[in-house]
Image 1 (cartoon, rainbow, N blue to C red):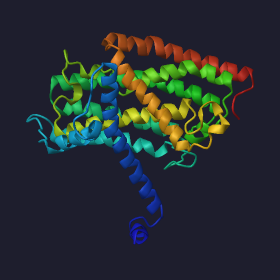
Image 2: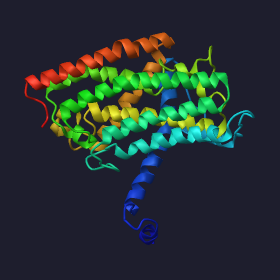
Image 3: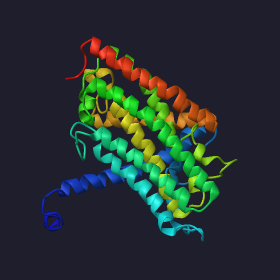
Image 4: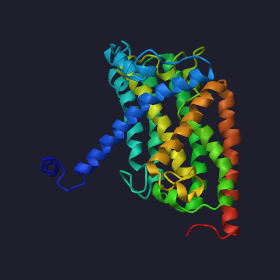
Length: 340
């Protein structure tokens, strides 16, 4: 029945029942982990701050994300009278949709990828760049000075750190010789190469904090200057879509970091006797470690000033990553280690 309906809708056979099932599993999985990432964040933050965190709704507070979702669904969506209604509602939908579309090329295990394309890295970079449009649209369409300034801040911040992230990815491509994410995971990396890539791993970790507008780089939401930033006028499900997009982007950036630097689904340090553990478990464990870093940074670090944020991106990370690309390519050339 499903196959016959698909053949009418898609006569060339691009979509199959398995493809649609895989898409549904990815979307449902991302939404589930986004919901419980909020719970995990509140629990980890409360443990670091010596308080309880969610504990009343359900056993150990496990139903708190569901209660939060019901609350947001039941609220009224208010559109400011002077706002551009179409763009105002389109912005959060665009941001959330882009955070889901990017998962198409992420390999969860060997062969477990929706679209195993040869330019997966470029695809991810293009999708992450397009999220800027959703933020600018939200800031402009709200017809509020606070929202507009928050949108401009977020856009300039994301552009600044995407330059450094691009150069870090160039270092990975020099070592692996491929834009395919599965091939990047499987490419051999000697110990000396991993040591050379470690500073770029640190730069990438800091850059994804700025890319996702997370503390200590959450300047688009300055309570003392621009209140809630680009989404200050949003309520109910429109606000929830921004919220879902932000946490989905956190999980996505953690998965990208795992794929590029931590060996994806492979056991750590190439330990053979750990290969009996399914690859998706290793992938989830490594992604969870990066997500813990997100939460840890939020709890422990104070917010940067805007000039400090820009100085770090343009005067520190950009020269450092440019130098590292030249240095790494020279070392690979001199040691005859450039991938063929």
